[in-house]
Length: 245
Image (tube, rainbow, N blue to C red; front, side):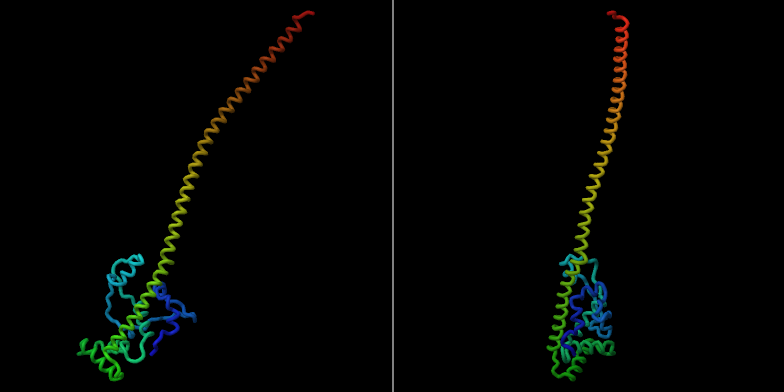
């Protein structure tokens, strides 16, 4: 029985949260690895989980929205069971005790107390060094392994939140700010267009007035010039006709 995690487990360490959130990760040989031990390897049977416990407290501390109670997740459970199996202590301890106890479930005439005592007595025959204290120490060992996994999970959760939530919200805020700037630019452009239109109307009106004045001035100039030239020509004729030297 191995006392250390195998290499595959080590390689997948640090991706626990991501794997369970987005699916299994490819191993180095390109195949999808299944970390489930199957129902026969489960150390727990009937489980009820509520967000009123540590899970809710942990999630709230990272500002993760939670609606309702948590539910038992087979993927999580399979990963936990495999983690326990990968960290199984050499010899007979709680791991073997739990397996044997599960094998006795449903045996007629055995209540819980009788089942626990019977399994303990049977295992002690195989390993006389087995004691109640040894079982309790093993339980604490596996709880410690799971607590270490919980710490890794929290770290991965923070990282995933930073990448999958915070980064997107920051980008959304940036786009909103950009949109506000664009709206302001559009408003400025609309105001400029309106001002240009008003100026165009005014300038066209002024141009029409100026054109009319210039046209009238030209007509006045021609008329007046013709009058003066005509007067001069008339006087010229009179001078020729009326003055004798």
